[in-house]
Length: 198
Length: 198
Image (tube, chains in turn red, yellow):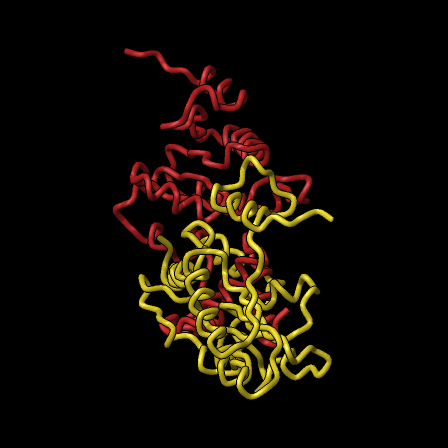
């Protein structure tokens, strides 16, 4: 235990996700001893981030304006919506540079254990978007886990009733991976989704 | 990439030691979305920690007062000084509850590669303490690595010339460890330092 404020800072860092007591201690010492580290900048960002960061009024992505940079970009294909759970999924997909349509951020996935049902996700906003403009495909890009699959299944049932074409990201072996180390569910999916070689 | 301030916060967290881009992103989202997390408290601690945290005028340990809680504790044995590299070593040794003497924090270890020589460490203050009071033992508890050993060797030469008894923490097999996984240097040290079983 350290005296007073140093221990307080260690405790506070220890509350953040993925930071154990040892890392918290190392970070606190770094801040204390590294003169080049701009403490006031981090402090300022912390106090401002919650008030300045908003959710895009169209897609729910994190942004600083009313609309996020993707929704306000006229060059994006306005007829395809990719549905994801969180803003960080948008970032991951953008990194592939494969998708040029719009997003819809649900704000989570259906998870009865955590008490999250369809009503807790921004599904009405998605339906409104589909109703208001010409959408030729909705890509379901929720996580390939229990909650993500449940959410995709729920949405695909809902969307096919209103007759909008729905697709789901492929599951299969990760590129660069080793077949023998793939779990049986992934390997099963890779078989199911196999493609004919032309 | 996120818009504006969220990315700034991620970047700033990514500058801290041991936090990669993925962890920085997770932390930023946690701060953004977890209402129960007290952002202003962390911001306040960050701005205050450097001005309020001091180094103990006697031993160099981190403290909020002029003297640290150990140096101001009259029940501690004032005749033994344990020399360590950093404040976190004090915390580690205190946790053992084996040592009831005083500490001296050098502020690092001799490391020619990093350009740290004996003059960069608080060695004069240590000599002054030894000269001013009756010290019956100086325990060298620098790290058992290259820099720590070099520092211990330097200090032991220096201190034996002024005729103060010097000891060094034992090196050997870690308790609970497995002999077959010990590196050869540690195993060699364990042989060198073997004790007769009475």
